Length: 89
Picture 1 (tube, rainbow, N blue to C red):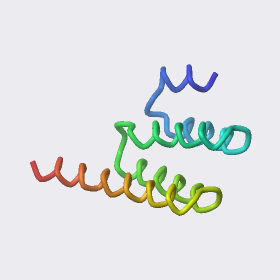
Picture 2 (picture 1 turned 30 degrees about the vertical axis):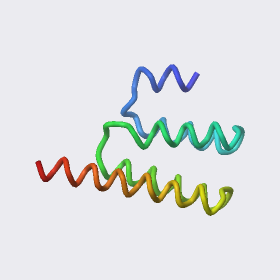
Picture 3 (picture 1 turned 90 degrees about the vertical axis):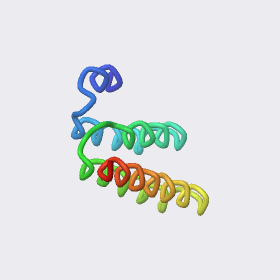
Picture 4 (picture 1 turned 135 degrees about the vertical axis):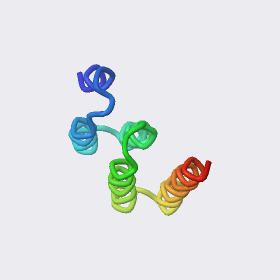
């Protein structure tokens, strides 16, 4: 149900946040990680993406491994570098 809503309203970060909360509570780690990977690639404001990166990192610190924590940090660095090169051009 949430997938259909988010397909129609992809920039509604409040809905993404509720969906993530539900998946953390009831979904598998694989599903939660896939959802975080989707949300961090949305074309919304940098501030909103930072919020989701922070939540993703908190999730991994609670339930992940050192490798999964590092993977999130690397994705965040890639995001920052990509945004930096966009503003430089």
